[in-house]
Image (cartoon, rainbow over all chains, first blue to last red; front, top):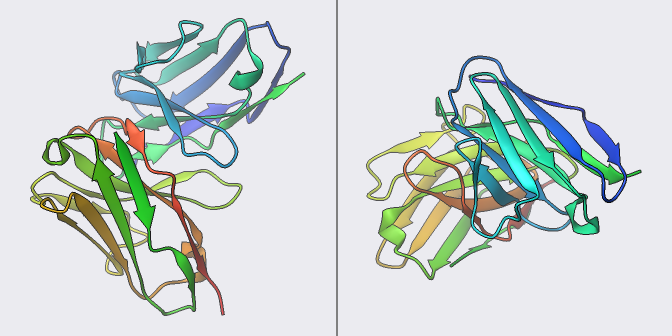
Length: 108
Length: 117
């Protein structure tokens, strides 16, 4: 089973600044990685597939990068609606699909 | 494009529950459907997948032998039969679609399952 480790667990950033979230895989997953955003009381929403391909309707201030075992989600010019939980997910080797434990992005 | 779950509720340990996921707004037979659960305050755990024609079915080890996934393409619905439920099955259950083995691009709003005596 591929383990995904997200860091940090909690990230405190001011509105207007840039947030950088990391996801590390226990073995190479090429670019078979997705990122999701989840707000309280809501289902997860897909942000990226293939590590860097933005999903429909996702603003350009969100960017994804990485390959192999190291991945990054960057959110620039943070807006109030961006403060949420973020999860990465691998689909390189499944079953099982696996998710990282999440990073909570909070207002500084 | 929508997925709507139903069937959650309170059940005693050892009991059973059947969840449903109703799809609309897209070609249902183009997609695999997955169940993902989330313990309150915790992360996401994939539970089960069923391919578009039901040819391929997979389960997480934690539910294998207790849960059964199925689909009815004519009714555009997927079901999760959960037997021998345990307290650690308590979670919010989401259904989500995927093209083949790709990411989950559409999710339902979820249904809560509570296993408690």
